[in-house]
Length: 194
Image (tube, rainbow, N blue to C red; front, side):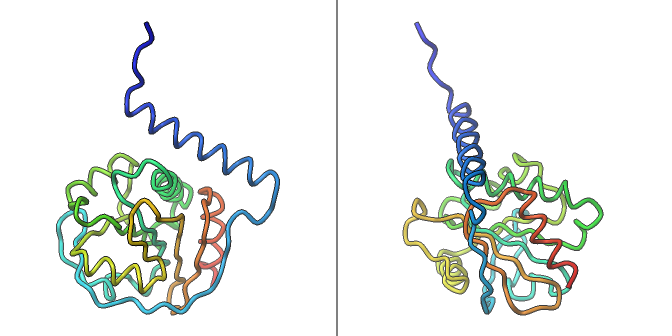
């Protein structure tokens, strides 16, 4: 009799499948993610870090650091693990430059993603200092998603999106698609040189 597949195994298999899918897509075409420049205004909303600390998002995003921001939710088993693995690998690959980069993951499921659950999420991916996960009141999260043109009414409909802002700049780079850590590193390095 066959043993049942454990839930953790399913997650690993799903993530592996997505990585392979992205790899094969890259082999066949050069433009597997879309890059645009956008003029977003960061809303003045109060959110909570994974430590439960209240922050004002507009002042929290350090203008002297490269900001790399994505939208995730902790129980996601599709694109969020891929985004989080890219963030974790980016931190490792940046080496000494990591101190010049602020990684921010904002939940799109604030009803379930408590600071404690987001802290677990970061630990699961081996997050280092400089990568925070934020949650807050539903209205505040919706305001943030709308400000970054990433609003979805159903968390299952979210899409792979990474936003970057160079130190001292107002303009944001919008990367739509699943990026590898090396692609993300390349994008970051371009912005760090400005």
